[in-house]
Length: 381
Image (cartoon, rainbow, N blue to C red; front, side):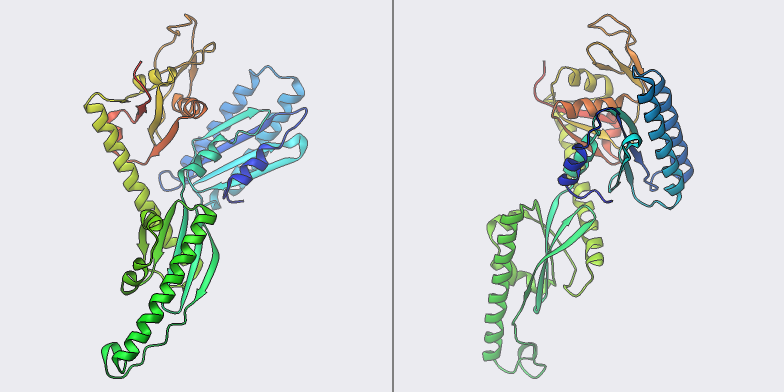
């Protein structure tokens, strides 16, 4: 099942078992940055570490065995389907003793993680939804206009308008029309048609609360349409694609996805540039693992930036749960810290628990020269 909306997450979160824990598993299956063999090895290691972790959990024997059964089912499912799986990410939720199984195809690669808990660990799903924009798309020509809702890799037709613009006549005169009278007649119909299209778009935006507006049409129609475009929509018009209402939704979706990717890359570049600028003037921003963890521990982080796929071992204090890159003893509690396979995972989790915005920045990026991690701050203690 594709991850498409918050309702799916809410429904998953409702599942409870009176006796058993739920296993939540997230897998990075993106073959654009790793081979099939590398994916398989990483996931095998992830499951092995989860099995080892399970041995040390303070749970009754039957609960532990139930979680082992979850891991066996997940591993079997993974290696039966991994070779033919062509999506960036996968999330699986299992409670075998309650005959519960749910999987989600993810549009972005998550960080590899397995969590045992009484509730499904759904926070990464919500984070993925937050990274994507709900797009309203109007595709039109002089005969027809179609309005689509696009979210992640799903496209849905919402509304259609048929134009009543007279056809061109390929006889003498301007653009094949016989006289100026016909030209004015055509112009009047075009303006009325595009006015209706603009009003429909505005009404749908108010109803559906789209974040971005994309337009698909020929360049020659832009002046007509923009003349009637409400200022609210002009502010949300993020780009244009070359598309026709006659094209298939899948073909249109491919064009929208390409434009959305370009816009997100532009946003990422701007965000990193702003971070670096703020750091250089000693403002409310920091970079590097030690500094970022320090400010995160102090609840001073507003927005956390992390290079996607960045991973680093570290430590956690079992008492105060502060995170460290290198301290084997907690400076505050004066007790031994616990080693972590990946402190970045825990930092992201801590940031989300503290209601910080988390931004994954795709490499290559200047953020890599600043330690692959940084943050905008609420304050400097």
